[in-house]
Length: 453
Ligand SMILES: [Zn+2]
Image (tube, rainbow, N blue to C red; front, side, top):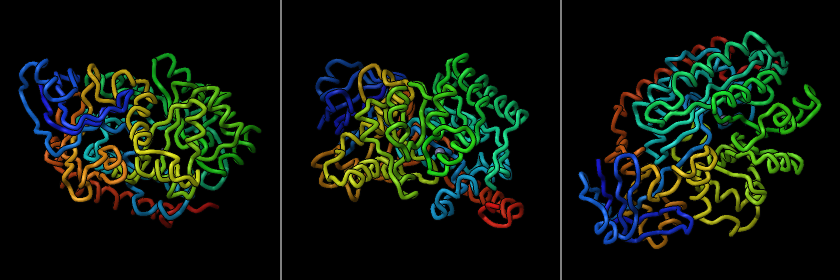
């Protein structure tokens, strides 16, 4: 299939941050064959099978969200107002009551929402994440998927007691390995597996070391939450006598092939561990803001760390993530020029591509790269006049403005609708699954927040 997107405003995010005012993209199969001024593309490319009229449209690389929990839409509207109590009081306990079918229903809706928001790649880590693999394959998004595992007793952990269990560890590792064996490299390479221990407090040293050795043996990348809250520092100090960053480093998790989500609370020593190991950071500015704090990503970038952006969970409009990366960097620096629109767009695209080791294949609109991109209506409410397209996209665009999305050269969103699933059905199934899971949660824990003691 040869597709031409003709006469559009194209944000290439190439090394020169080139913007073409009247450009065209020619897609041959899975890849971009040419991107240039329209006349140049028409002169050098063969006849297309399909032409998308790009007049009045912005074409941008698809967003790469480097930290997601699709099924955590369970907590939409609830966990935003309980601070970090959501971690041990909601997230882990829900894992003990939600069924696989309920998680699948809720996560499928989220996945469709993200695709509709111009997100073409997700890094998805979650309990029983294997339950999403079929849906990911069919809806057409690109994904790095890991079963998020722990070996701490979850109900004890909610009460502040930490006990690690070898049987649980073996079971959970088995699930993660099974996902890798079944799905790594599948869907034409669009799905790749990762090893994803949840966080330091829920992981024994044995679990972290096993994740590292399985990742090395199978050629997988890793991801984990790190530096997500002050509690983590106290608990890891009590349990192991080191900081969370030292703990992760000592058991093989700080490395260039690893994405650490949040890195929200760090001191200079932690930042040195990050810098020395060249570990990638998944910055989740929207979720950080909900928690009342923002990660010092300007420091990480200055130190040479790769930073990508993640939506984390509950939210569905990835433009809010890109925007909040810029806005929160300015608030943190108390400087209205601390981060510019093209920096935020870079983090959301190339920063993500580098974080997953696919910067030669993804993250920008350049010849030879995979055709993962979005087309926005530049004449929508809120985007006129289009004087600086990068600034307009970063400050003013929303999910609603995305009309068309291609992943691997295939049309997956068109006319602002996901093509392969019925939106009404996804909404209905997610709604009833959430109500059923919460009814069971309340029956077990007596409230929508598990008691602390
Ligand atoms: Zn997370």
